[in-house]
Length: 364
Image (cartoon, rainbow, N blue to C red; front, side):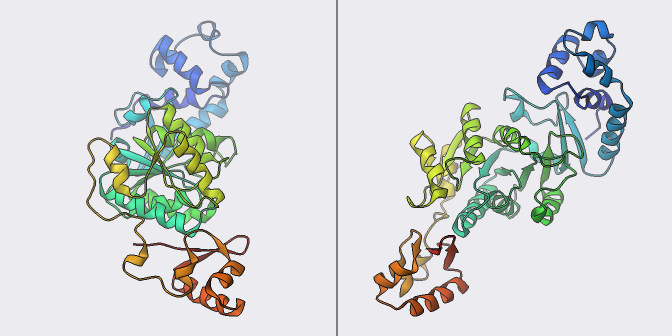
């Protein structure tokens, strides 16, 4: 992709304090491309810019920031996309607040692929992360690039699933593209940069600031044809993303869970509000035009189909349960239950949850 010869102008406007996205678009609508905006005198710009922004526009600090951006973009697989670029994601142009400038690292062509957002809790259960990875891999295999936010939990699992299929994954960051957050996902971020795409609207060096993460959620939903919520509490960023997706005219999907789990309540709320309940990747594909169900078994098909549940597992059910209840159901002592739970954990068939609860894991 050829670099935009006017990139310095785009950067100068976008990096000037006091020129927000809305103001920048207003300037472009009034005067044309950035070079035309920058050719105007202060008198013509005062209807859009305050005194502080006018002073900062041609300041040394902004010029140095522009040069840092240009230097960054000169590296291999580094891109800065503007609203004028053919490579700018068309899906974002359909949204009400597209960023004027996007920083991208990796396979920038993924921005032109059909995509689906997969999001959920940072404090996900083992089953939730397994579901996210399995759904994402199946959807990637079906031709949908997986978009998520590089957070711990469901996001990270979704990215791993996307990387496991041919359509890969896009991680939308709430920091500058040169800042890895959270650090625990540094290795995953490096792998996405090699095989997928890292994307950010924030200037280089932008640290993790709480209010930037809800803002980036509109890009996660905006890039995608639909949004799948795997696990989410009622008050969570994932529900913000889902609501943004609905406002943007995207499909919203949710995986149901236990009525006793706080991480299922957000999904159940979405389903009550009109989101489509899904229990397999094929349910998602059936709702998206141009994609057909694969004919594979449900991603959430119980492991019991190939490995029958016996002993403690047979009486465990599918909801979180504590040791006392298991003792009563199985007619075993606490020591016997603890021994069997340890064995089932080592086999990957049971996971320990906060509060002394245990839950059966189901894998195909």
